[in-house]
Length: 245
Image 1 (tube, rainbow, N blue to C red):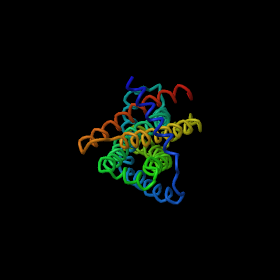
Image 2: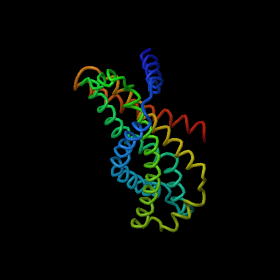
Image 3: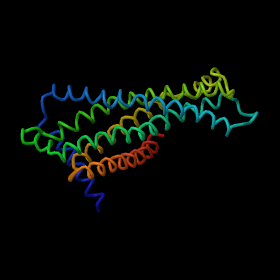
Image 4: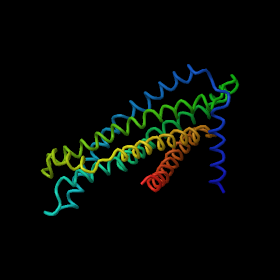
């Protein structure tokens, strides 16, 4: 019953976001600021995780496919397909749910408990649209960009790990990656990126906006935002795979 109540509350939150919109220039400025925070601020952790995920996947795939009957280029095929379909979009967004989601929830939650949100409402500003909409738009723009970089860095990590561990040469890796490459896998990767970006930013904004109490409740809202975002990502990851594959 609680799930139904929260889902209905979330839907009303999304509807109220578009009532009484502010001037377009206001959203542009705030969206650019949020793009910097979400995109540039998350770049180092995304780069590190993506590179080593690709490297580890290459080493573990080689361990599982040790056979004279299997060409080394198959490793490149497995790593590249796994990267586009699952590793880059899902793992990266799970990490971003912790970093970006907790930041959004704590920021809005702090404004809520310190009555800054009430001040916005008194001034006639739609606080939900003013606070949440720029974050959602920025996430929809920057998180897919981060996923594109994660795809590239993960495959680069696989190539480098394969070369310096003696598993396979860069040429063999690239041949394997090209043999079974389909543009449709990139489409699925971007579909997941956009979907997960919306889930992270909207759920975190929702949790932060309905924070009540003090500093302790802000921490609880931040934790709840991360947990619910991760669960939503995993559920929609399955649904997208079921529908599109």
